[in-house]
Length: 258
Length: 336
Image (cartoon, helix red, strand yellow):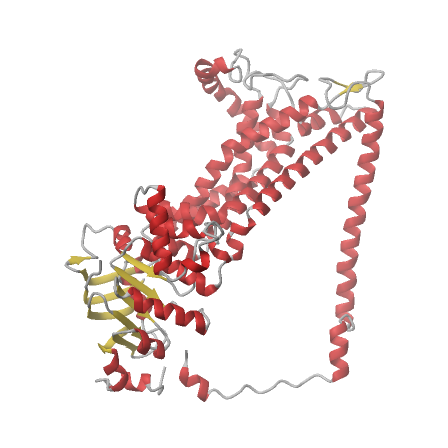
């Protein structure tokens, strides 16, 4: 399943500091949308508002609306825990649970969500690991700790863990920034496959990566340090990288600042 | 990636290079006066420490060996402590039993409470409340043990009768909780007092460990849709596990060696009682404290021998804890 995201008038704060201001955008199902922009422009913060992880940070607070299909994630009787089960997330640094085996890592989300039979669990774990292109590398050591894998494998393990619960949306916060080029390529290929099933939003500092993996690209910027970050424009990736409609986007992409 | 700075940054001025001879001397170290003095001081303290430790060990073992040699009873199994008899007859069985049992009960009470308090302070309490709670726990650690002893004897003991008769009513049939109605100056009261005394150290160490759980582990659980308790279960407790074990061992060490509080509360004898609710029994430290003042030279040697046994027990406990921690090292948060 894959759902559409509609954000309107979203502003997020850390305490009294306004981190991002008045962001609106639509993200279509089964697409990859990349967020680019200089450091501190709020693209990670914005990403974290899409699964209500932003408010986990002390002082984190959000105004505005995020509709997932037609349901407002910030509605009055929406449980943030339920939101996060529907919107999965992969982080900058691979973070498998260090005390769990590879199998248990992938099964962790399923075990939270309800009762599965052992055989059922095994099937889903296998399917998820295959989905993350990791199965062949780990099928003989599912009971070994996940922290024993290489960085790239750990990140794919985290992706397997996130997709095991069949979320509607998959958020990725610079998923390759801690990885070598080969592992990065593996993840990028994987993103291409995963977009058949999920709505994917990826934050990246690597513009070539954005150009390679995404269908749409959003450029964020901030007027000055301490000012809130804003969405400058969002458009088809091809257009953003060839002929953006805003000058700042072109300056950033061509390396004139940032 | 910061593209502009790569091109615009001027390379920093190179610091003056030390001459080859200087470098060689620095590598060998300890050629500057300050370095030499410091090296001498630290090396000297290290050696002094070892010498002192060795001297103590030799002295204690020698005296203990003398005592055990004179012992007419079996040092390990005799239920008696008569060092003034000729020949003297004494054994540590009762002391070992009392020490181990009271410490284990104290741990069983204190560890869950301490872990719960530590979790509350680090993951549940609002910040404004966490500070004061932690401070009060710290205060508990600052109370001298004799004060605990007095409090135990004057306040805790008289208030134990209710609990004792309840335990006797419902669990008396087990034998462990049967009560003759005597004053509650017993192993169980001692255990409860010890639990209160070791609570702060276990809480504080656990709290520090829980606080160090990497944000990314907690976020991993949160992003999967874990509730706060599930985050604690999936990320915090597994990461803190070895730390909690270490904390418990520190607490156990204190419970095993606690002297004044036990000596003040317990009404000792030299027998092992099935019931924890009837007076009697004793611990190593309590026995030493209450007998040392009036002991003859031979009697002191016997007490030293019992102290050595306590030392060995403590070593064994710590060793066991280390093994437990090591065995799970592969899965610990340390290699994440």
